[in-house]
Image (cartoon, rainbow over all chains, first blue to last red; front, top):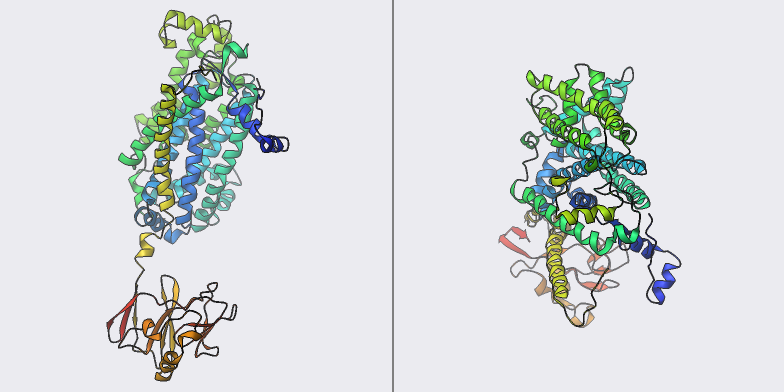
Length: 419
Length: 174
């Protein structure tokens, strides 16, 4: 569904330029004339919100790098220098630190949206896998960024995460020393993490371009999971419809973001990270940032070093295979009554794993973590493949336009209320 | 884009302009901190004064101290240097300024100037050149014993930084 550009350059200079580099035509066809399904809901605004968040993190990060120094004896003090001395340094640092959390909130909504409406199914498998790659890069970037303030959580988070690789049989220890540039996390580690933390966002930006390219090539999925049959009947142009809607959603999201920046800037952080890194004393209760907690719970639930690491990475890797694990031909959960229930169970299990990851690894928490970890994998490896075979989907509307008109006729704006 | 063709100004035009205006103010408000952070920060401003003890500076000696990252020349001039500087007719100067305006009265022997050539920012060498002052190795400008430019290409005299004598032998620059 490529939106063929109707762009006509106005004026001599524009025509001269367009015939040499048709960039205005490209922008016009992908952000103005591009046809978007007319049934999109607000969950489809998170792509734009995520693009904005990436830009926000890059801009605030470049500014922070102007005032920061990656050198173990001074890095902690340099972050305090940003907070106290630099004009508006506190604001820019809180934007960056909370921006990472906002980025993950938005990406999790975006991913669960994709799961609920079957956005990973043909022909969008490559689009989905590119998204999983972006997610992996985001996690690596966020982890290395958290190390830079060189507080206690920075240091011990870096120690724990890099030690994951020591579980690899035979060469594990060598790999870990190679990651550290020494025999423990130290100044060389800090320096290379800073370098990579600066590089990876631009790699994310590159994959985002591919992600959007793939999206605009196959066209957007939509809440009914139907293909566009008639551009005239099923779609509306990106501008002004999607543009205005995206901007509105972004403003609402920024209100939420601002609440964190200005009222509870350290709510999502950990107070131990305001203690300078001490290689001789581990904090009593060490936890990763909230967005890693479900995976952290999976890691701890397996009573075997290598097994835990494999389970944790497997929990992420399994997402890349989702297009083939889900055997149903119907995309949207709107027309899959059983899948819809299992989806919500899965969502609760994921949040539950997050909660368990924040709790100490003892007693009932461990047992609960094991049950939820097992369910996490069962959902992907057993439930999804079988559901496609046994579930009887509801009849699909003939087209997006029909689906919209049917809902309009019933006067039901909330699709789940009567679906 | 399904614009209803209406003539003249509509309410929708007003909403567009009002929304755009609010958005522009918001963006400008957000851009300001990102511009402001480029200014010298508090730790730089805290170093903006330098105290110097003049008693160890012998007659005829030039010492260089740092103020705001810049070299400051302090020249304890011999009486003949002061006389030479005051004897020069203003018409011979590129940037005319009497020596009296470049020193503190009662401390005429001490010349305090920013040691940065007014041409392109090099640091001139002391006790060199033909005017008992400085010679800039970069492009050949020469300054006299009052720090005034005598030979181009520099256009201006070495500037006198703000400073005060806190006692007979101490100054605070800045």
